[in-house]
Length: 292
Figure 1 (cartoon, rainbow, N blue to C red):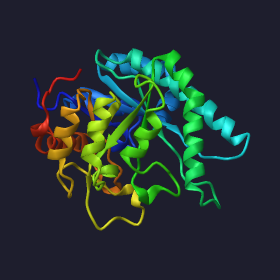
Figure 2 (figure 1 turned 45 degrees about the horizontal axis):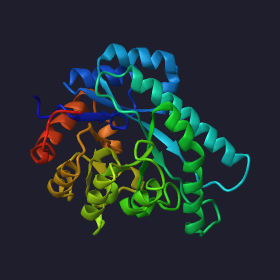
Figure 3 (figure 1 turned 180 degrees about the vertical axis):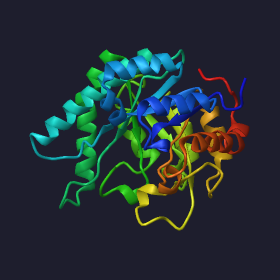
């Protein structure tokens, strides 16, 4: 079995590739799985995207993204919930089209503070209410909502859920087959409670996705574009990956990179470098190289 058999190339890593190109680049790099984004899927239409994914022979590891639940006023809040229900339908269709071992995972990003608000507690409460509103549709569709905690520097504009513990607090109100969590190394590596919370996630069967990329300083002016190849920064992938594996996770592991310099490189080069960095920085700490 290949040392990178569980590697999934998140489509954001080659952001400027259209869906057809992303699928072919992933396959030609010897990577067996891909994490998709809604926008490139929408460009070709869901039916065509499903056919392209099926023809590629790749597994589908997740769809990004749903969420942004913190809006306060109607009809914007109702529109946000309806949009997530559409994302759930897309996830179910793509999961069905992917190769054996695909995961029915929709990544959920909570949303930041509404403009002019300082009420973090209220915003987090609205996230919980919104998940409760869409969870029945996820259950009926066979889709797992995966709450992703984002680094605290994104709390104002992207996610009021900042730690894995907070994500689990939200998820544990629901069946684990319906609501789980994403463990993204970039966002949570700094947390002194991280390993303890990974164990908690494992006990509750909550780990829906594991994403890896690295943190290095100085950060760019746009902190969203601060992600690096695994091994190019300060994150200890050994302890984190071992803990995720020991917690029972055996799904695909996504490399998701937001980095303007990486996006400017040829797609095939980026896919090759992704595979090499994963093999060096992550694979040595995995208990199994077989995706389940």
